Length: 150
Image 1 (cartoon, rainbow, N blue to C red):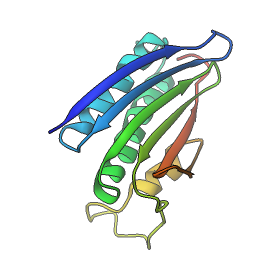
Image 2: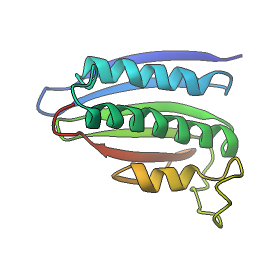
Image 3: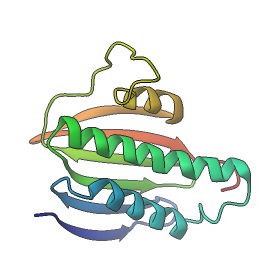
């Protein structure tokens, strides 16, 4: 059974803000994480976007969240937590799971075949990304610079 708990935690304005979404199971989790992220972006002034570049940046963020959460579902038994860390300069997305194995690139597949493109999407759209060990698993993270006028 899927259950979730949320806790928003505001840190000082100059230090940024953090939002956490605790997750259990895989059913509907990608949609929940996208919705949670979209709400946070709206609260942080990313939407409504004033320019085409800013709209594309928001779309990129939501796609990247979908990719890392989907990868946790497919390769790590599902995510345990989504953390959004927002500052004036960037957004950091962290997805924790219980699998200690870090993401590894596979040989490129044909673009016409479904699946296997998630890390390529991270490489192209995220400013930076990686993974870190944590007790009982790992955290896959990515960072996106905030456009000049979101």
